[in-house]
Length: 478
Image (tube, rainbow, N blue to C red; front, side, top):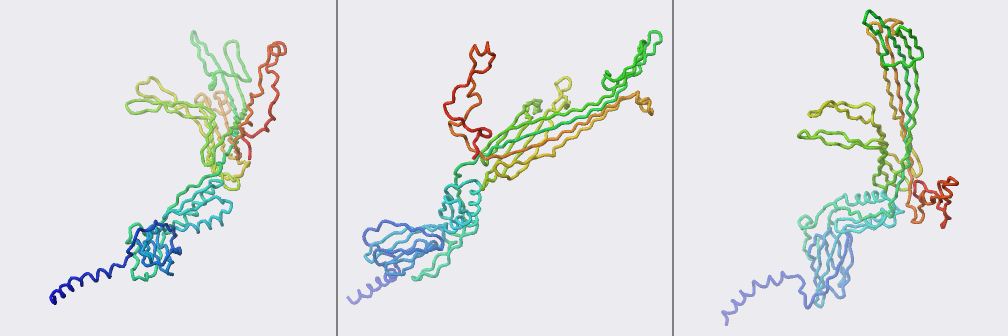
């Protein structure tokens, strides 16, 4: 019996330190339903329990830490973005599980939006881990841009883990870099903002082109015949036009003729187009009044394809409605036409030469900002063409004074100026019963009105609804 006692001591001594090291909660009975605690980085909360706390354990001390400030109250603070849980054992031995989520603090962004954008009261800011979520409705696209820029100021800086003191139980918190899923990573922004009512912009464009041409011509045509037997020789005959329609014509019965033509011609052409186009804010609209031509383009293996080219009066614009009724407008008007001159080409397998048309184009591109109903003009697109032709006989046309009888002179001056006047309007669609077509009041005449009275239209029907006031371009102005 005396020898068995030392052996028993050898068996019990190794197990004593293991029992002392096991300081975690030992739950008795069934665990309570898990709860949830939402925290922001650097913020804390008081967690009150139904009974005194006996033991507590935090799964990831780098995310959250809990300190006992009263027998039944825990002080929980969010240290870094992430998620963890706590197991809390009460005095009765029953354990409770609390899931803890630590995210970014959206309160600062909410206060900034309320201060800088007081008119936008429907913006909601929520946090999801390291991400700020913007939701709700705003008035225009400019407000969306400003809200996102303010949110970027909050997520651009890295989130620094909170430096916490050493817990009372002696366990040091784990470094944030050593814990998976925790660290100082910059946040993101999820933009779920909607525009309450997309603005529609209508452009009324006036395109005016004034073309002025000046033609001056001086021609001398002479026909001198010298007959000797059966031979007859013509010395000179009208160099430029081939037929003189001049002011002075001298001729003899023997065939001698002298014609002098002096001509001056002025021309003025006015071209005016007034397209009206509409587009939603932020979307591109376009307009073209003209035509299309097809130009052959060489490909591999001696193949030729036709490429489509447009010409005429065109307009491309992209409006953006800003706050206060301001309209940011990017406009690119263009006027192109087929030139009277062409480019001659020749290719293998095609007999003769082909003439390809040349398109002359004048365009402008600019970005302006104006209010509803305001206009701006784009001018200065001026084109000057001067053409001079002198044709005459060698040597004789170079004689002083008399040389004018042996040459013809043609001078042409063309001047063209292009002007764009663009007016922007904020519009909204007409109500369903408000659209009245131009042909709504047109009725065919009866046979008596057509045959006897010569009327092309019959009497209009009586109006059943009050007439709608006229609108600009088929749209109501706000």
